[in-house]
Length: 324
Length: 249
Image 1 (cartoon, rainbow over the protein chains, first blue to last red):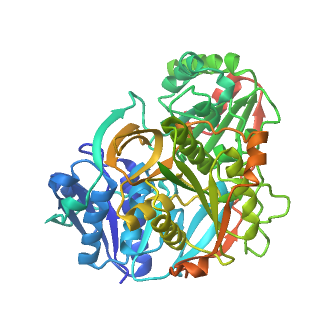
Image 2 (cartoon, chains in turn blue, orange; image 1 turned 120 degrees about the vertical axis):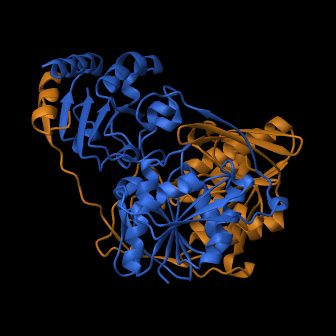
Image 3 (cartoon, rainbow over the protein chains, first blue to last red; image 1 turned 90 degrees about the horizontal axis):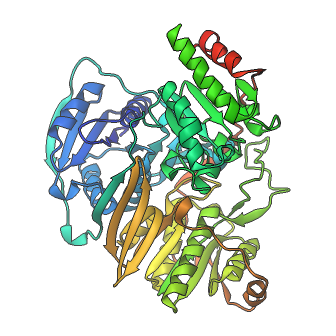
C-alpha cells in the first residue's frame, strides 16, 4: 500500500519540467502515504529515456514498450497503463495535468473503476488532497475511497525533481495491447512554430489581452518586449477568442496555469478566469490604461498607461539596462 | 445522425464566488445559473452538424435537481430537439455522473456524444474521457474542429505546443475547446417552440447504477488573497524597480 506510479510524459528525447514536477509530487505522495515512488515511460522504444528518469530519486523505472504506443493515443495508453498498474499493485497513479495528462488520466481512472482528483495543488498528511475549484476561488479538501486512486497535479504547485546522485533500476516490460480493441488513429501533429521558451517552463511570461486590439499588434508591439526579456508569450482568453493568437498561448482557468518569477500582463483587464492562471506568479506587473482594471488588484507593480506608448518605452529601458 | 449533448448547470462565469464561512460550499444567493459555457459550445456544434446533414436529432441530458429544467429549456430554445433530466439530490462524483450518462447513452444509442472539456465549477475535466472508456469508444478531447464523413470522425485537438489531428470510427465522444465555434443565442420563436418540446425526467436511483461517491469534498476554503502592490509613474521607473527592487530582470 502507498506505492505511487508516475506516468512520465516526454517530448522527443527529453522530459519537460512538467514531468519532473510529477516525479517530485509522486515522491512526496509516496513519502506521506508510506510507499515507494515508481515511474513508467511508455512508447515504442523508450529504454534510454527510462534510464535518464531513473536518476531523479524514484525507486524503479519501467520502460513500457509496444509499437502501438509510438504516438500518444488515449485508448492504447490507458489499456497498457492499466494493465501495468494491476501488475504492480500500486495505490496511486499520478501525472501532471498537461494536455496529455488531462486526456489520459480520467480514461485510466474509469478503466480501473477508481476515483480521480484533478490538478491537485497540495498533499495532506491525513489522506486528503487539496485541489482548486471555481477558477481557483475555492480550495477543496478531498478524500478518495478505494484500493486505487488517480491524481493529476498542477505543474506550478510543486517543484521539479532534482537528480539524486544515483540511479534506480530500469526494467523493460512489453506492454499488453489488444489491438482489436483500439479504434483511435494518429493523423498529424502541427507544432506551433516558436523559438521562445515554453509557457509552462519560462522564468518570465509576457501576456497580451484584448487591449492589443489585433494579432498584428501582438507581433509589432508585444513580441519585441517578449524577446528583449527572453520571455514566453501568453494571452488572455479574450485575445484568443478575438482570434489574435492561437489557443495554446491562453493563460487562465481553461488554458495554461503559469507561475513564473515575473508575469507581465499587457492590456489585460484581469477577469477571474485569467487570474486563475497566473496569480501565483512571484512578481506580477500590469500595464493597462484603465486604472480600475481588476488586474491591478493582484499586481505588485501597476502602470496606468497606454500600452502602445508604454511597451516600446519598456523595450528601450530594458535594452539600456542590458548595456549599462 | 443522433447526437447526445450532456450539459451541466454552473454559476455564470462572471459571478464572484464566495466560500461559506463553515466551508460546506459556496454562497448561492445572487448567483445567476447558466449552461456550462463549454457545453454550450458542444450544443452549438451538434446543432451545426444536424443543420449541415439536413436530418438527425439533438438530445440534451443533464443530471441534477428540479431547478435545472431552466437550463435545459434554454438549450431547447437554442434548437435541441428534446431533453432528459436525471434527477438527483445527492452529491455525485465524476464516476457516478459518467455511469449515469453511459446508461442514458446505452438507452438512446447516439452516434456521437459532444460535451464541454470541463465544467467551470469543479474544473475536473473528467466526464468525457470516463464515458468513452466505459463505453469502449474512441475519444477526442479539446476539439477545435470536427469533420464527419462516411461514419468516421476526424478531430483537430488543441494540445500543448500545437494542434493534433486524430481520426476514428463512430460512435465516439468529443469534448469541446474554446475555438470550436461561437454559440448562437436563443431566438424568440426558438423560446416559444422550446415550451412544447419534450423534457423527460428520470430519477437517478431508478437507473440501477452505482451512485455512491468515491471522491468526497470534505471542506472548501477561500484561497489566500494576493495584495495589490504599488503604482508606478513610467516605463522607466517600472524597469528600474524590476531590476533593483524585485530583482527579476
